[in-house]
Image (cartoon, rainbow, N blue to C red; front, side):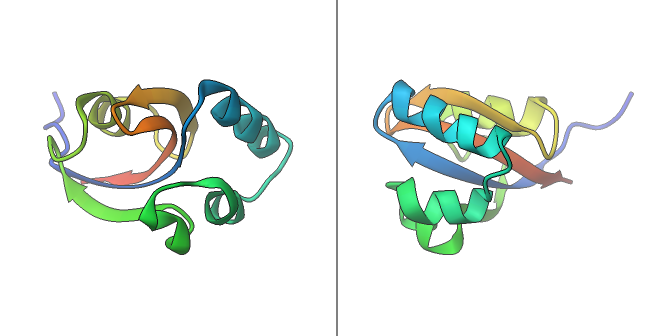
Length: 96
């Protein structure tokens, strides 16, 4: 059995409402550029970097966010995922 990943790299788009997140997810499904949409719509400071959060350790993000990054498919946009910060669209780039 594989050892669970200890770190991951992800990017996200954070918005205030589920409806906003769903609308952006539709744009992504129609070929929208994740980085550009993050710069335009995300309320997180990471928006300046296209939503890139860099590499981080397991259990350093909100639990719902962490669960997606460390348990769901890589390179797929997941969400909306609700945390105390709002609604996220999350794409895990890699796990190590």
